[in-house]
Image 1 (cartoon, rainbow, N blue to C red):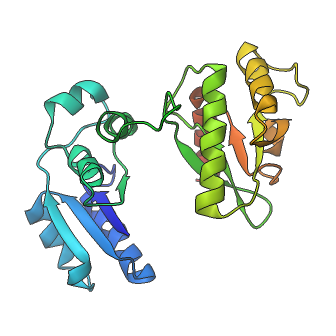
Image 2: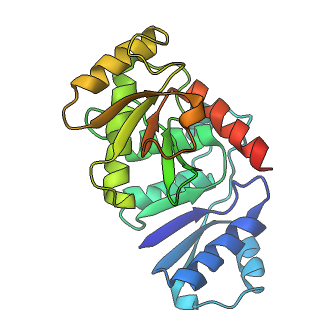
Length: 243
């Protein structure tokens, strides 16, 4: 596994990104880390750590896309931005995955315009794992990439979450739920009512119906689907409580 790491995107600077990358490498024996950013800064920081030098590569990037920049515009103007360079490594087959703590919009734009979308997927969502009262996590999807969604897009999010849960986490026939303000099929707004019907008709999914906010942490579902507006509010609320 070759992981390209955007070391310049984090709110905490390059220090934490490099620290995390080397810790992962040392803890897991991961195959390779590709640190993307200014080589002089990266090399100076690496002096602080013990690691297998054969497992670390440095790829130069001289620009950074800030959170307050238009993602699409910045992507065109800053061709040497760290997130752009890191994503291109995957596109060109030099890396298997990208890790970044930078601008969410820039990451999504890079994924769409550089890597492209899967067939049948209109908009890529963001997924996060939320803790539960059991010994596992539930996946919440979407947590902020798509504020305004169509019912068919929520179905697409469910299909992606189902695939991730099966292939990455290893859950067989994961339980899929729709986050709503009631459990009844007719509850919610037009988006959730129509999405409910689409999810129910999708025979490849183990759709268990609507769940409410109180069910988020009790391991009722393996994958919880919502639009990015609701998902981001849930995520930030959880972060605030944890902090």
